[in-house]
Each structure stands twice: as C-alpha cells, then as structure tokens.
Image (cartoon, rainbow, N blue to C red; front, top):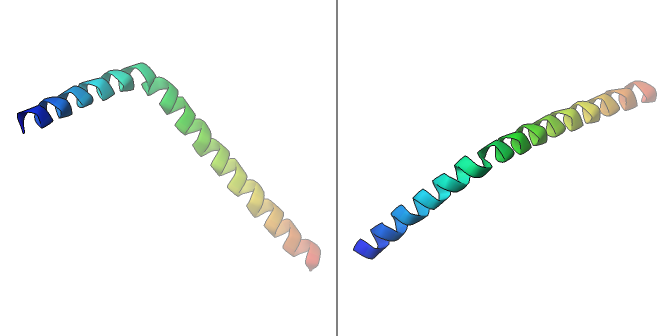
Length: 56
C-alpha cells in the first residue's frame, strides 16, 4: 500500500512536470481544434441552408 502511494505521488509529480512543459502546446492545440470545429460547424450550417434555399 505504501508502494502504491509512492507510485501515485511519483506519477502525479511526473504528470505535473509534463503539464508545465507541454501545457502551452496542449492549450494552443485545444484552442485551434475548438476553432476548427467551430468553423467546420459554421460551414456545414451555411452549406445546409444554401442547399435548402437552392431546393426551394
């Protein structure tokens, strides 16, 4: 049980260091992905509505 706790602490410190190292990269990637999804949804909606108006 003590070994498990030590391992958990070790992994949390490791992940924390990794987060400090790659946090900015992850943040930029997430914002870019969100922007891309937003643009893609917008374009799909525009295509959908133009298709409807073209059909009418």
